Picture 1: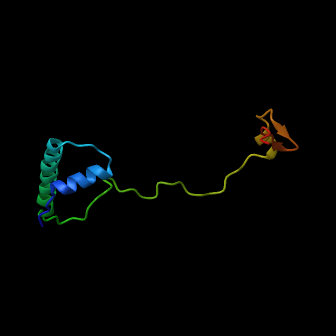
Picture 2: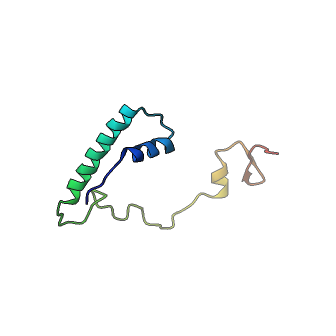
Picture 3: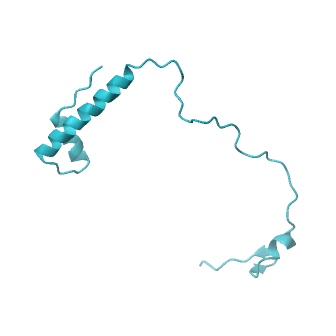
Length: 95
């Protein structure tokens, strides 16, 4: 399948992207786009016998097991803070 890119299409994309291109710039970009589309067309012709891989190394269960552990008591948790009141952390007043 061959893609055709016209100068009008380049101009439309440039307008949407708010680019001010000269005629020479549009011709150069059009040439580049045609080469890129041709390269992708060549890739489409390749017969691949394997599934596409988006991750080179298989990732399996990268999280640790969720097991209950001993937690800090309220006193231990508050022991490192100077800002506490009535058994809770005290933050700055907002309003």
